[in-house]
Length: 245
Image (cartoon, rainbow, N blue to C red; front, side):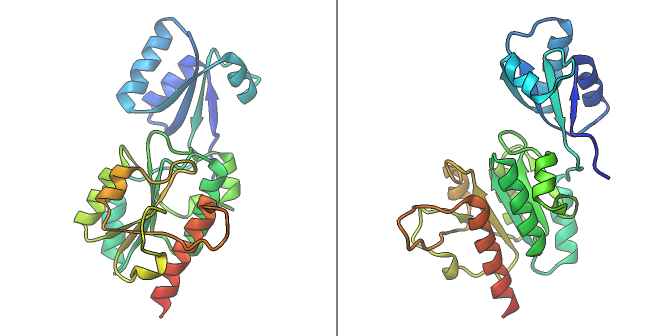
């Protein structure tokens, strides 16, 4: 069952954090002061919660309720720990397929990618705790409910997930235009993880450097890039094609 995706009010959000709710992001009004706001900010730092300081107009666009200067997005799904997800998948599948999203920020792109991931047999999606698109009602809708079917793990840094997957015997391929290899030059028949980057800047250089290999899509027109959800679909279906041979 889908859980509520928004709570508001300083004390309510403090209680939600202390109760262990999975909070994707908190919006705090700029200049907010007081003992409760200090307590909240301490909890945010302690738990590594994604936070944005915004003008009051932003908060009133998010809700008409008495928000007291703070609104939180609660994830409608339960996230996995990386180690738990990877170990479970590897135990049960000979050639698992993971998808890493390096600070993808658009919730609809995220939802579309989750939908494609479910259709192509992805065993788990890994995102970063900070800077990543939250799982919102829009994400759920765009994913056509696939967000409830594909396990999603959150990590502090995508690079850490790359190293952990490699240590677990998973080959990591980064999708980037900064390579001469095309997606058709790479073998995906072994345990595989594919990394897709942010809409505006792609995969971060440190993640590219840590990966086992890189690949790009051949672009024959004048436009220099594809929408990330479309590009992700091409990569994932190339994995499907190779594994069906």
